[in-house]
Structures are given as C-alpha cells and as structure tokens.
Image (cartoon, rainbow, N blue to C red):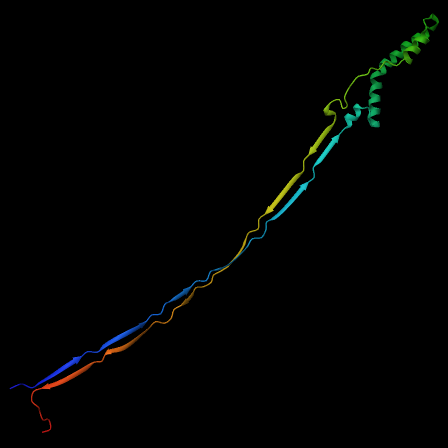
Length: 192
C-alpha cells in the first residue's frame, strides 16, 4: 500500500536592485585677481653750479688797478722811498748852501731831478703766472628721491560649482515566492 503523502515545492523570492549612479560634476572657476602697480614717485632737485673767476691779480699785472688799491700801493711806495727822498733833499740843500763855492750845483741838481731813469724793454706774459687768475668752481648737486608705491592686489575666491545628481536604487521582484502542494496517495473524502 502506498502511503499518502503531501509533497510541497517552495520557490524562494528573489529581489533585484537597479542602481542609477549619475556622474558627479565639479567646476572650479579661477579666482578673480586684480593687480595695479602705481608708478613710483620720483623727485629730482638740483642746486646750480657756481663758477667764480677772480682776475684781480691779472689786471694788476697789466697796471689796471682799482682806485683804493692804487692809492694803497702809492702810499706803500712813498713810505718805502721817503727816507731816501729826505736824504736826497738834504744833500741837494747842502749843495745849494755851497753855491758860492762853484761847481755848478744848480745844473747838477736840475740834471739829477730832470732826467728820468732809462726804462728797459722786457718781454713778459700777462698774467705772469697761471695763479694770477683764481678759479673757484662748485659743482651742482643733484638730489634724487624715489618713493616706491606698493602694488594694490585685490583677489576674490570663487567657490567651486558642484553638481551631484541624486543616486537612486529601484528594487523589484526578480522572482515571486510560491509554494506548490501536491498530494500523493489515496483520495480522502473530507465531506463525509
């Protein structure tokens, strides 16, 4: 006799997942940069040069003297010659006192006083030395002042632009679950 059997068959459920993973997009704009370089401030100042030429001694060598110097030199000459002049006048006075002795005192005195000394021609250079003309030169001064101006730098950061689309997952039933029962054996009447 075949025993009655209940046979069952189970099919498990199986799920599936579909992933949607779009690409992430990142853009980094360049920073905004503004640079300005002001020109340097420069000032230049000069003092004029001075040239002084003193030709007083060169003119004196040519006998072109100013009145005060000519008077001083004349006084100095007279003061140096005065003792000799007094001696000469005293000697000539003595000669005149002895005029009665003869000897032509008046003619001798007239000849001595009336005949100027002979002048000699001498070749020379004017000015006699290069040091008779005095030259004084003061060069000009140049002052340069430079003031540096720092650059003006303005920068601003631009944030990155990030685009992240949403990822998604969809779950579906790949295989539906099921249970099948089969009865093997005699039929049973459940009604009665």
